[in-house]
Length: 127
Image 1 (cartoon, rainbow, N blue to C red):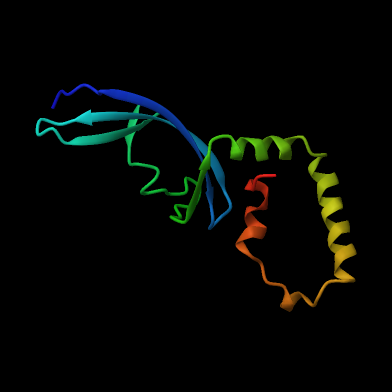
Image 2 (cartoon, one colour):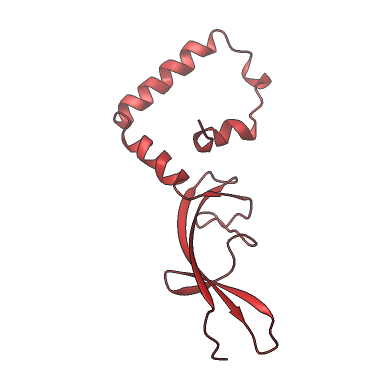
């Protein structure tokens, strides 16, 4: 089969795994083809290699999980830059301990707190 791509579109997506919290970004070349029977089909390539559509079969590159949130490009790198610009890990850990201690006095007992998906996705939400 030696058809030539009628159109190639470049798209990039950001991904966040809802299982392990890992985030990554990937750029794709999306080739639109028409076969001998005049049926349209699409080929996705990442780094020059043919890959499955990231929109239909997302898989976490860290844990292999399949519950993956797909976002517009730049979301993960923006969060990663914010985290890199924070004070050192030791300072951040001390701040976290202070915050936990400060809220522990006023918070409900630990067994009464329920985490929501929105709590975990907060770094990826728009401002």
